[in-house]
Image (cartoon, rainbow, N blue to C red; front, top):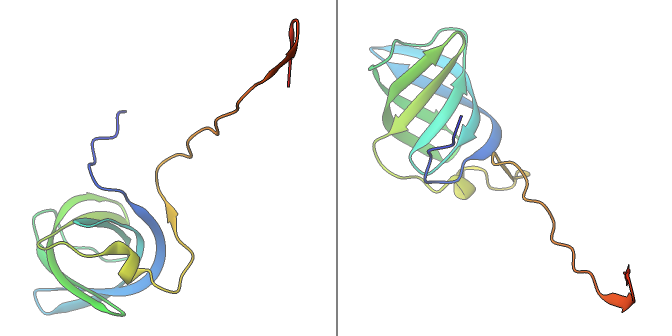
Amino acid sequence: MQERRKERRYLADLEGRLVWDSVSQPVRIRNISIYGAMLVGALLPPVGTRIVLITDGLEVCGSIIWLRGEQCGLLLEQGVEPLAVLRDRPVRTAEPPRPSLVTLKRVGPGCYA
C-alpha cells in the first residue's frame, strides 16, 4: 500500500478529550500531523461526525474520516504545528527510517574500505 500523505506524521502518546454532540470522551492521540490525527478510545463517534479535539495546549475542530474498532482518523479544520503539540516529549516520525548512505573508498585493486 503506497503512502499518499503529503505531510509528515509524528508518533504520539498523548491523553486528550474528544467532544461531540454534548459527549466528552477520553482518547489517546497516537499520531498527529498538520491536518490530521489518529486516536484510540473506547467510545468513538461515527464517520462524518464533527468533533473538537482537546489536549494540553490544543483545542481544534475536525471530522471523523475513518473508524476501525477503537481507532479513528481525524481531518482537522485548521492546521496545527505537531511539534508544538508534542513539545517536551520524545518525537519520532511515523515514516520508515531511510537507509544510511555508505561511502566506499578504493584502497587497492579490488579492495575497498
